[in-house]
Amino acid sequence: MQNRIRCRISGQNNLTTNLNVASGPRSRDPLFFAFTPFFCAHADMTENLTTTDIDWTERLATETGAAARVAAVIEPVIEDLGFRLVRVRITGEGGTVVQIFAEREDGTLTINDCVAVTRILSPVLDVEDPISGHYTLEVSSPGIDRPLVRPVDFVRYSGLEARVELSRPIEGQKRFRGLIEGFEDGEVRLIMDIKGFEEPQIIGLPFRAIHEAKLIMTDALLKTVARPKSKTKH
Image (tube, rainbow, N blue to C red; front, side, top):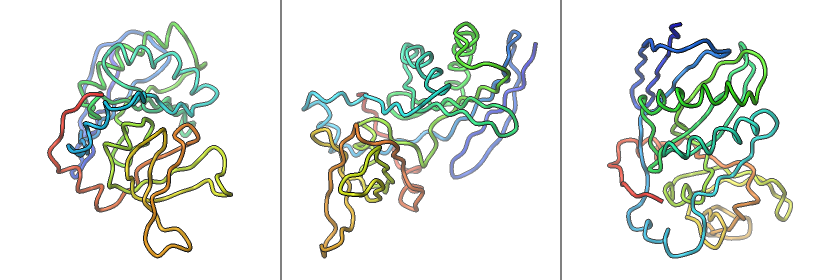
């Protein structure tokens, strides 16, 4: 049968288009979302990514329940296609929606990429059946104010503002907000104001203690959309 696929490109300008692709019977309706690709790496920092034994591609897998089951099924499939899984999220507003956020190694994702990923994942999910009932499958890029899920993300987006929540408190605090300074010795470095200090300080947060981290929508972040992209693979 024919499924209508909505492709949305979101950046400084919003465009929406629709196209039809042939697909077989399934218990889900596919939706494809893609955001204007952008890359925010600082060229003078990329050399640091090969100087340690850190696994720069290790992902913070914070999914639980059905989302964790979906992630376990699709992550190796996505990697074989040359993409990286960012996050799986399941929502129930207006029917169950399985949202899969993915990207290429350089942090981009195009509409054609979304289509390719969905066409591969759909039959895999049919066979593995990690979630029961009817649901909508949605594949998209992480977006502008994206989650930060790998050590390399904190190098690519250094100088931008982020919000970090830990899985357990450190000195009574779980939530932090500051400018990303980078990643070093297994820690995410943030520049932030600390009580008792006149100048902003650099703090280190253990990467594996992070529950959630994401960029904050600011004018500085929006300006990165227009920056030339640096192509560095890690």
